[in-house]
Image 1 (cartoon, rainbow over the protein chains, first blue to last red):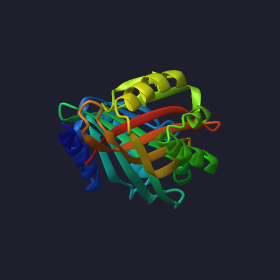
Image 2 (image 1 turned 30 degrees about the vertical axis):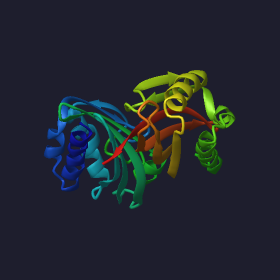
Image 3 (image 1 turned 45 degrees about the vertical axis):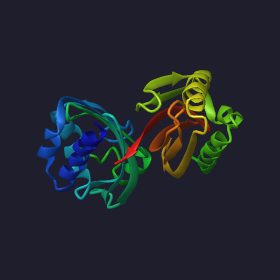
Amino acid sequence: VAEQAVEVVRGGYEAMARGDVAAFLGAMAEDIEWYEAEGMPYGGLHRGGDAIAQKVLGPVITDIPNFAATPEEYVASGDTVAVVARYTGTGKETGKELDLPVVHVWDVREGKLARFRQFGDTVKFLEVVPAEVSVAA
Amino acid sequence: VSLADLQSVRRAYEAFNRRDFAVLDELIDADVEWHQLTLFPDRATYRGIEELKERFISTQLIEQFGDFKIVANEFIDAGDWIVAIGTVSGHGGSSGLEFSMRFVHLLEMRDGKVVRAYDVAGRAA
């Protein structure tokens, strides 16, 4: 089970890395719960792929056009996969470089991404994308 | 988090391996919420340091896996959170089989104490 869950999660990062948002959204369960860390410009709970695309993915790519989330380690147990990842990119408004370690905890259900929880230093992110300049504001 | 927070978390892992639990009392808030997100040793939420020590540390870890050891080899300062990454290992209490797993601990710090934690342990993949 853990191996399958990792492949679903890995597929999501790979889709985003090649800019294939549709494939990433397609890997999500219809009722996916996406907990973006409070304190991020996109913070809070978002339900479903449409909300995630409009409230998180779209704004992130606008705020940081060369944004990348690169997985560095996967830890998997059953349907739960923790990913230690690194966010990089350049803030469009500030010109500042982002280089931020984060942890994502994913739950996979019936082969689909069912829940996402993000942990990271939101203050450092805000230095690159201040909340007031984010398109999510 | 402060450098002092990072250092005291690092010391707490070392103290755990010596079974010196006094250090845990100093570092963990009395009202801690500890969320075990994966099946090892049991998917559960422990509330308060007494429950954490009695039900989780003593019963789930020490009694089942007597030589249970936890080595954190990376600490990340993530704002209000410390992320500790490393390896847990030991011998299964009944089977005696040796095991080794990767873990990720997310520790939310307030006033120098852990107030909330998420614990993920599993296979490196």
